[in-house]
Length: 80
Image 1: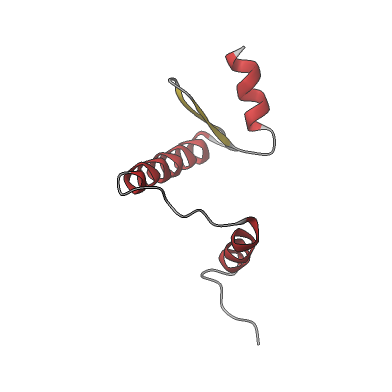
Image 2: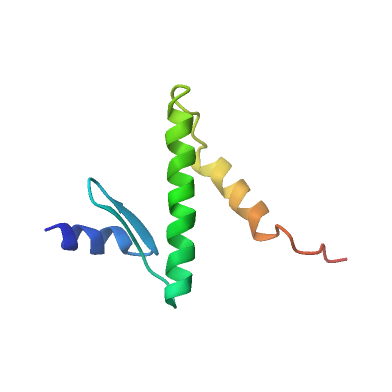
């Protein structure tokens, strides 16, 4: 049952958290999967630390769209 749920959770994603079991991270290579696992672990820790100060303010879907658009250009030179 756990593996069936993990497969559903991974649809369209490269990582998922398994309650009381850890995480699954996949990538084109072992190095890619490890890098993603390290990133997910860091984000989970940041979220856990945020919860220590109270209920975090979550971004709406519209706000997330703006953030994702900005990150799509992050670190790339502006075209003229």
